[in-house]
Each structure stands twice: as C-alpha cells, then as structure tokens.
Amino acid sequence: MTVQHNPKKSSFLEKKIAELEEEIRKLKTAKSEEEYFLERSEKMIQKRAAQMMSLKKKGFDTISLWGMYDQDDMKQFKSMTLPVFSTSTGAPYDSLIDGSLLLSYKTVDDPNKIYSRIDNTTIDHLALKIAALEGKNVPELTQGLCLASGMSAVFMATMPFLEVGDEFVSSNRVYGGSEQLFNVTYARMGWHVRWVDEPWDISAWEKQITDKTKFLYVESPSNPVLFVADIPALAELAHKHGIPLIVDSTIASPALMRPLELGADIVVHSVSKIMGSSGRAIAGAIVAKEKIVTNVEEYEENFVMKVKGGHYRNIGPCLHPPSAVAIWDNLNSLQVRVKAVSENAMKIAKFLETHEKIEKVNYPGLPSHPQHEVAKRLMRFEDGTPGYSHLMSFEIRGGFEAAVRFAQIFDFGVQVTDLGRDYTTWVHPASTTHGQMTEEMKRRAGIPDNLIRYSVGLESADDAIEALDRALSQI
View (tube, rainbow, N blue to C red):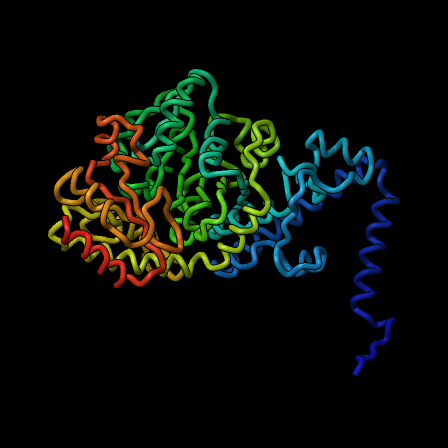
C-alpha cells in the first residue's frame, strides 16, 4: 500500500527548498568566489565544533559507536558504515579559486579534502571519534589527528615545540621506541631529553626543568613496568612553568583514563593496541585541547590543526584509509572490551602474586603496586568503577635463565612483540623490546632480565591461569 502525502506539506520538500534558497542567497550576496569558499569553510568548521561539543555530552559507548558519522553522513555517502575513501587525493576543485584556497591551506578543513597525505574523509572521522572520546568531559573543544603509527604520533606531538638547543623532561619509564627516539634521533637534531629516574616523585621532575624546557612527557601506565603517573600533579607542575604536559595513554585508552580531563594538554596513542585490538592496522593519534599551556606562542591555540597544516603536511606520516576504518570498527566496543580484559587481568595478577615461582607482579590493580592508590583514583570506567587495563608484567624466580626457560615452554597465547590484542600476547623484554638498552639503562628503567610482559586477552582467565601454572611448574 502506497502512503499518500500532499506535496505542498512535505517536510522533506520544504527542507530541500530552504537549503537551496539559502545556497542561492549566499551565491548572490558573495562579493567574490574567494569570499564564498572562505565562508563555506568557516561554516563547516563551526558546524563540526558544535557537533563535537554536543557529542562529548553523550555516553562513552554512544560516542565510541557513532563518532561524528551521523545519519546525514550516511545519507550523503549512501552507506550505513563509514566508507573507505581509498584515494590519493580529494575531489576535483569546484573552481580554480577553490583549489587555490585549499592549496594555500586557508580552507584546509573544508569538506572537499585536498590530498590524502594531509586530509582524508575516512581518517578525519576516526580522528574526530578519538578526539570526542578523549575529550568527553573536557569543557572546551578537543582536536584530533590520526597518523601512520604510535611513534609518528609521539614524534609529531613533541617535535613542533623544539628548536636546536631546546630540552624536554621525560619519565624514564617509557616504551623502548620512545626511548630510542628521544636518546638517539632527537640528539642528532640538537634536542636534549632530561630523564626522570624516579617519576613518582614530583620534586624529581621539578629538578630537571630549566629555562630551556619546552614540555613534560610521561607514559602512563608505562610499558612494561606499569608505572602510573599522578597526572594532575604533573600538569600543575608543567603549567607553573608555562609548559604543556604530554601524556602517552596507550595502555589505559580513553575507556579507563582521559588525561585531558586530569589537566594534561596533549595525549598520544598507539591506536594499534587496545583501541585497535583486532591487530589489523597500525595507527597513532594525537588529541589536544583547543588551547594549551606553552611557551611556544605559535601553538597556544589550535595545536593539532596547526601541526596538521604544517609539519605533518611537510613530513607526511599519514594513515592509510583502510587502516582507519578497521580501527573505527574496533572502537565500537572499546569500553566493553577494556572491562572484560581488565577483569581477566585482575584474576591472573592475583594468581601470579601468590605463586611460589614469581618474585613480583607489576599490575596497578594490586594493593602491592607502588602507585595503586594513584591508579585507583585516576583509572576508572564511565560508571566510576576502577579498572586497571590489560597489561601486566611479572618477574620469575631464577633470573634470566628462568625467564628464557618460561619463554621456551609457555604455550598459551602468542609470544610476540605486541600488546592490546583480543588474544593474549606476551614477550621477554630484556631480549626483545628493550634489547637495545644497555644494562645500566634497563636497570634505571626498572626492567630486570627476568621480566615477562603479559598482555591479557579475552580468553577465559581460568584457561590462562592453568597454562601459566603448568609452565611455571616446569621451571
């Protein structure tokens, strides 16, 4: 049966007529093509900002499912799922003036994406979703940028602040790749890192700050020893000195901790980990507040957008669109997954802590963890319940030989340099991820030779415990 409507009272037709009349008005009143395109771009930016602020008021699971890909986008692209815009460039210019404005970066946020190395619709939607998740309870606008890897994100979040002779202060509890970037690559550029060996002590951070310091950098929780930073205290210290706090929050993900809410200025992620738990893509992300504290005046406002239209554009660490959509889909269930693996991890950590073959367990959820109270205060799900992530590490009695023996016989999950997967992964850091460090560097970073890094998956915790007990009994 066909539904009959009076065309003169059709809300759809009335809406389309109003849209067309508004577009005709703009075309008639515009003094020039340039003014028209600039106004179009500004309107899009304002619309997105309003959408972002509205989205951040919704529940975490709603944000992680929808992002800013709403029904209007579905109608425009004729797709309920986010399309893969797998193209090296954007659409043809509407006119020569349009192209000129895009390539001069005066309308870089225009919906007519200029070039996938700089901007791409699929990647842009992923960045917007992550920016909304990280900025959920932040009262101001939050901006996101997605990149080819977590290391790209660390690089692009830090290098814009630095010139030859500048310094920055970092916890020495960082991922091995970050340590190499700061110690080796940055040294060749004339940028100096000042390491904090006791990052739980705020006074140890303050002692390292000089008039050349451009930012504080911390990874929390850290990989692989699970140091948890007091982010509000670090943010207060950084801002007292007029510099930003940059936090690598890869392990927690925005499901468990949102550093921008706690006072941080910039957050970086290796999105390839728990946020992209299927393991089908490599990606990184930067999220920043619209206004940050910094003594580099150029970046006080719109840090992400300025990086995007500047150093990011020039260096080219862009994400592949199919990778972006794979992670977009993974994010749909982020909080559900993080809750599940956190529950499993707590069961496994409690078992290991009482095992006779284990010297020590590093897991923030255990009262024995030195930053347990900090973690309990800062690492919480949307409903307020604490959670402590998928990652832990433990030290096996018997030193290096015992850890190697464990690696040879343990048959659960996957022995691989990876973490945050739906399945369990584990590795011996001293001979793999942190193998490039000297013995002194490993000692100072708290990484002993008998340490096993263990990333808990969605398998039954009982199955994992049985396999761990079986392997440990043979050492």
